[in-house]
Amino acid sequence: MKINADLHIHSYFSIATSKSLNLENIYKWAQLKGLQVVGTGDFTHPGWLSEIKEKLEPAEDGLFKLKPRYAQAIQTEIYPKTSGLVRFIITGEISCIYKKNERVRKIHNIVTAPDLKIALKIQKALDKIGNISADGRPILGLDARHLLEIVLESNPQAYLIPAHIWTPWFSLLGSKSGFDCIEECFEDLSNHIFALETGLSSDPAMNWRVSSLDKYTLVSNSDAHSPEKLGREATLLDTNLSYQDIFKALQTENSKSYLGTVEFFPEKGKYHYDGHRKCQVRLDPQTTNSYKEICPVCGKKVTVGVMSRVEELADRPQEKKPINAFPYYRLVPLREILAEIKGIGSSSKSVQKTYLALLSSLGPELDILMNIPVEEIDSKEGTVLGEAIRRMRKGKINSQPGYDGEFGVIKIFEEDEKLDNRY
Image (tube, rainbow, N blue to C red; front, side, top):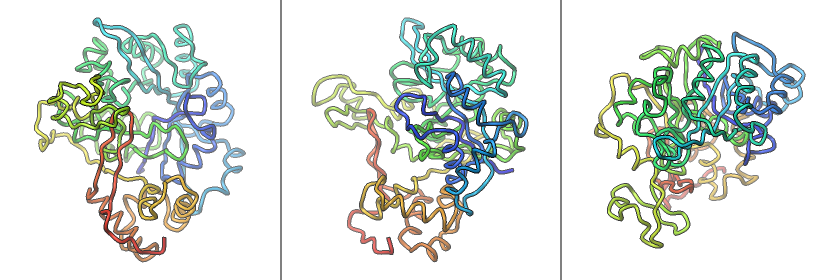
């Protein structure tokens, strides 16, 4: 079965997330986006785990589904062309902040559990270490290696995947608080790490430049803080619908069950380039080096972003691919495409209305962006939208890369192009 999976998301119990990020809306938006498997997020939070127990029920091995009474209550908000199967995997993100090798480390990790009993076991172990009720993504004074040990001891089918591994402030390889290799972080347990999350500011091609990462499966997830952000990145699989088979696909090199990832254009990510947001200074790696990582406006240190950090650890040229490289697909969210065409903000009512009309007419967002023939989009929805998707699929975009916490800007059309169609 072809599966679009998004395993790293959050709930409304996480700080700085939408209050609408509940299981019903995750179920709804998974269908609108075209996802078949989603993480629950935040299972270590007692309140959220209680909701998971209340609203989900076992489905296939290690997977869960929304109970019928909750699914039926929201089914009218799902269009016939977007309606589809949705399964949940128990997942959560944990922030480890600790000192190691004379440096403060801040590492985010995704943890998965095969059932509620194991989820509760992990939750209880972490509750003895720190406050797991203050935030859906708990911040714990816990060595990431120790977290992995707790996960492994809970059950052989509980897993840990380092999250958004290049983000400067909170990641395994980040410039501000990370390590230079996986082994430095996880030590004797490193062989239990089989997958790494690329994050919004990097794509697989950037990761391929570091040969020590070749043995890991590169996965992508949305890290959604609102239901509408689900599926902005995702992992593509062709496997049986079960917890065991999904993770078997991620652990097997050259597996026919692993099909690649859906990615942001990494320039869109908040930390792709270096810079200093306060001074509106955006720098590419070469310019940062020439300034010795100092902001030319205020004289303070800039935030060194993902591209520079990859360059620092790279031992391959950009055009070189590892033998086991899998495909990836860089997409621009559909609402952002519509916003550019209309010349207004992506959160405007007009864009939202058009966006939902397209889902009703054509199907889930990922299908529109990746699979539906452009000719069909042209004939049904106008040539400008079709042309935008044609260019995006070919990677023909213009970008102002993100830096120091500021999202980048992706444009498909030139400023002087006339966008004349029904929208």
